[in-house]
Image (tube, rainbow, N blue to C red; front, top):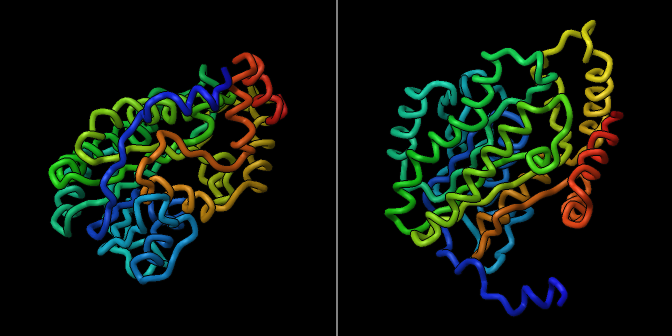
Length: 304
């Protein structure tokens, strides 16, 4: 029996969720890259202009009453998006998370939360400093979960909400010398996939968006930990050169923002959305090729 036929006779794994409308949309890490593109797309919707990717998808268009974007230092944002309220948030600091949530909830009922802020980190496992690992997981995992835990109760009580975790295709397809980053993105996907069934009966959807290579200038901000004269230096440099080249030719942040809007407007949000890096080919391929072969292909694409 074909997979298509099997899918047609199995019951739907999820029921339609209430459409979200009005309220407050929250996007973390909104000062640049994907976060900035996402608040810009939401601001278009708020202003009454359709944004790419905001089709009805069975649930209706989403028009927020208010948009909150976060940054460690909002005062340093030189080109803010009109219609966006910027609030400070340090995902490494539980007190900052608590203060942010209090301020955000005071501005209105939260209908959308996009957990986007994060750090991109590279280095051989053996040479990753412990403090860098702790910081990465506080930012990319524990901080995101902390924000979600404080916003989710209100969504549950009001019977509607959408939560989007911005991951990475590396969370599905690991790359050498990115082990810490890969692990953090796999962890946030695990939280989202498991928790989506918990909150579904309360009208709340949780989805993960995994972009591939993105041209956002992130390569200049990536943290790197490696002894270039050590045993991993040569291969690390090869990987990083190819990674930077792939990102320079990658999709735009605006394209990722389009993908983020899909689970927000869908009546039945999927667990996973992916875009860039030949996602429509790579994910189906991973279902038929041995895991070791997929790992070889990903590393080979990066010169390894």
